[in-house]
Image (cartoon, rainbow, N blue to C red; front, side):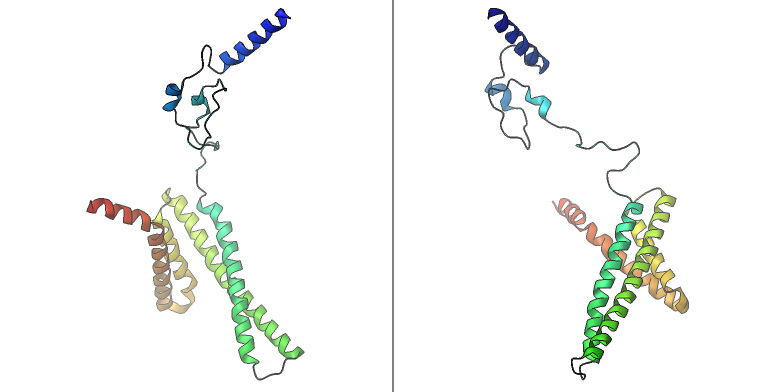
Length: 209
């Protein structure tokens, strides 16, 4: 029996030494200055150094050369798909409105339902194709500009939007190119301003103080 007790004490002492707590446990004064962000208070019966439980580094390990945020190439698929779905939904609603307006003099019958359905399908496909094409051009220009400059900032967004508008309206001559570029420049500039609004407001507030 004594031998069993001795082996149990050796095991307990070995585990305590493994966790860096050989000897007496930590007092309340020792644990008072240890940050336990996001953790519940430790039980006084746990003889474990709480400093080993605090995570000072990132939770996930990234591959060599990988960024913490997704680049334009990764976001391109989401952008194109989202624009296509948004265009299809908007076109369907617009087609339903136009179909009901054009057939308001007709009684509810199969020909009217078919005409409304055709209008919904046509408008949905038209808007999905339009927004999807714009998203494809914008994403392609954004990736090319990012790889060329070797940097990712709001300048890439504004330049990609401007070039997208110019290319999309290139069939309308120089005036169409100018209008398309101006529209793309305006929209992307507003988007960049919206993304940096909090940062700009904080900078202005800091300067005023």
